[in-house]
Image 1 (cartoon, rainbow, N blue to C red):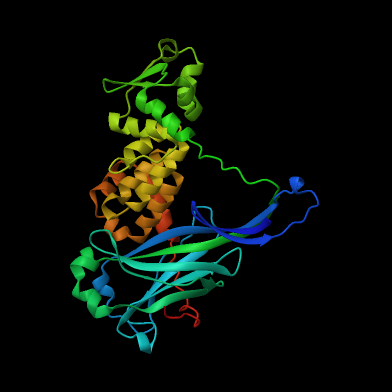
Image 2 (cartoon, rainbow, N blue to C red):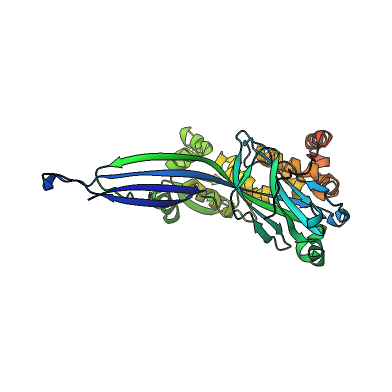
Length: 394
């Protein structure tokens, strides 16, 4: 008796889900010694990309006299830096229609997409004073988006309830809304046929093995000195990951001859975070030192680590640090971070211009002031018609 099977794979980020359908069938042979089991299989891989967006409305109490059917719209955003898909969030402060009067209505709209329709699951929430997501509501099903159409929750939260907890849901008179979108990227079906049972291949442990070389200082051939502390390392790994280290070892420099390198521009904790990335490729703990690690990544040509730092700094953008973040991004040629910081300053200019970090920029970096002025002059707000009437309540 043989087997016919069908393997379905649904891949969400890095976590594939496999579904197996097996059908038994009989094979007949005049010579039982030559009877072989035949196994055929196939799988369908559905790739899903997740992304999230936070939108803060400052001085929220000034917006409360909401007119029925009048909305505020967020800046346009995309799933990734080079993604041509454009989305926009909107909120109605006194309901989308007569039935939802007295509620905040929350919607997500697809403005444009190279491919249409777009299938996605949506989750909405409010970021509270602790930085946690509250009032989480989702679509429960996959929603079909055509261009200039949207989906939302007309009765997202009662205005009275929101206003009764200002310290928790409206810290500093700010309403921060968030949405998480899971978009179907593509679907691929593949068939396979084997005459022998499959062989399980163990997980590759190369990353873990290299990490142990660093942790245990095994087979090292150079010494890195940071603020008086010595760290043993491997020239081959350093040279493979960093063009700066490679240049040191390739040329007839003192570091190459003595196999001893003095690191003068990094703190020990920042250096260890950078080295952990060099050996494993994993994102280090960047809490409270993403700016310093960004500088180290730029100094030693670690572009992947640099982008990891940009992502963390983008998440931590707020009025008080926006000008400093803009300067930091410009100094280290962090293009994506600079774009986000510029957009944030453009949207919150009156508040940012009152901060001490902005005054430092004005005094010392006039070229950044000029760039902000150009951005303000060309800024436009993507207010559009209300979402399509096909919007439905969850």
